[in-house]
Length: 303
Image 1 (cartoon, helix red, strand yellow):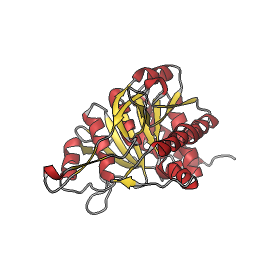
Image 2: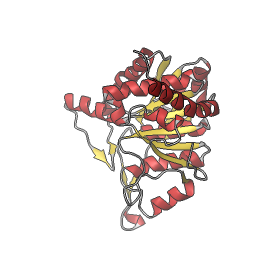
Image 3: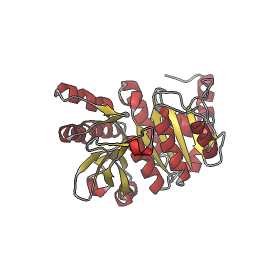
Image 4: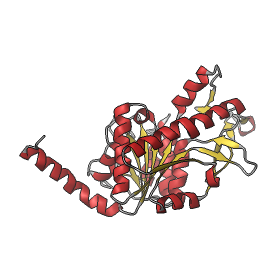
C-alpha cells in the first residue's frame, strides 16, 4: 500500500522527534517493570514486545522485570488453594510458593521470552535464583498499633525483600546482546525461595545498575493530583510533599515510593506510565509529551 504525502510527512515528523532521544539513550540501561493490562491484552502484549525489541535494536539496554499476580491467583484457584492477603501482600506458604515459582519462573516468564523472540528479539528468561541474581531475606510485616508497644509482627510466609543484586548475570547478558527477562523470585543464604514484589525488584535492579530509567507500567494514567490531573515533571522533593499531604495514597503509594527511592539512589529518571496505551514505552521514551508521570531529582518537563 502506497503512502500519501500527508502520511509520509507524519512518519518523518515522528522519526525526527525520536532521533534526539535515540541518540541520548544509546548504550544506556532502561529497566521496565511489565504487568497489568499490558500483560494480558493480546494487542498490548504485541506492542510492548515491539517496543522492547526496538529499544534494543537502536542501542539501548532494556531489562524486563515482570509480575504475575492474576496468573498466580488463577492457578491457585484451579488447584483449590485459598488465596489470602495481608495489607495487599499474598500470604505465601510452601504450597503457594510452589505455585508462584511455577507461574513466575515458568509460564509467565517463558511467555514473555517467546513474545520478544517472536518479534525478532533475543531474550533470555531468568529468576532471581539463577546465578544468585537476587539475594533475598524474609519480609517483616509490622502492623502499627495505637502505641508502639501494641505493634504486631505478622508472618506472611515466604514473602521476601531484596537484600542484594548480583549484577554479573545481567552484565553478561547485556554484553551478549540478549534482553534479560526477570521473574521476581529470590533466595536466601540457605537456598529458601521468596516471592518478591516486582516493582521493588525492578527498582533495586535499576538502582544497582545506575540505570538511565526505571519504567513502571500501571493500569492508570499516572500519578494524579487532587483534581484528577496527571502530574509529571516532578522532583523528588515535590513527590515527598505529595506523599506527606496524602495526594498520593492507597495502591499508588508503594509504586511511587519505589520510583522515588530509585531516583534518590542515582537512577536518572523514573516513569510511572499507562500500560493500557499501545506502545506506551516508546511514547514515554521517544516523544516530548510522554504518557505518564516523570520523576527526576530536580524535576523536568521533558525527558
